[in-house]
Image 1 (tube, rainbow, N blue to C red):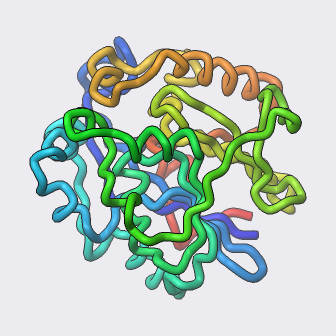
Image 2: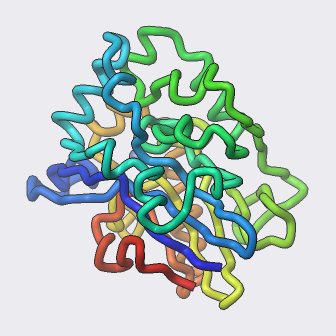
Image 3: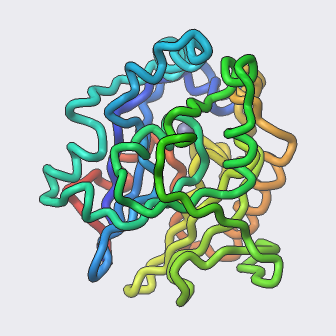
Length: 280
Ligand SMILES: [Zn+2]
């Protein structure tokens, strides 16, 4: 098993926007996806920003996202270079090699590339799907979803739910994606209603938790610092966010060797290099 970190562009924020009270220093952060190369296929965790982003943000109901993209996250992204389909080809893969795609949550900077993988099988949390697909126009303006990235896109989407009969570590329920326990989904609701994290046990014994946007920057976990109030309201973050962080924090304390990686961890690249470097 090989694991690659890919970033579909970078954003730039005042640190205090993503971590309450952390000041105005500008921090560059990635928009991470993880590519897992198994013996016979590729699995992707999140699709980042995709090739269609400019047209997707054009309708007025998405100008909230456009504002967020240009002036809040100040995302720098070149669809012709940074979209995952282009990054994969530079690694010698084709989009059709990606058989399974796991979506942590459906915000535009995570679901943006879904339609670039029309032949893949997608795993999406049922709670996230039901919430995002039922949003009306006003709610779409102020939430970080772009419905057209996933709804009505004729994709092969499997809606998943964690099973309370399968507690996992300190989580009350889990969903084992492929059997065998090497890739397990857990619930981390709050940042979005159905956000899920992926816990991977590599054949080497190395273990990762990809926690997506449960927290943005490492301080959000290590010091359990919430996002700024402005940020919480911009993405309509729910009350469950702090209990999700607490649960990840407890897990971190009980498994010090577990590598916990958020999707916008400013230590990447650095803590990990981006592809073509890979980890086993
Ligand atoms: Zn995000």
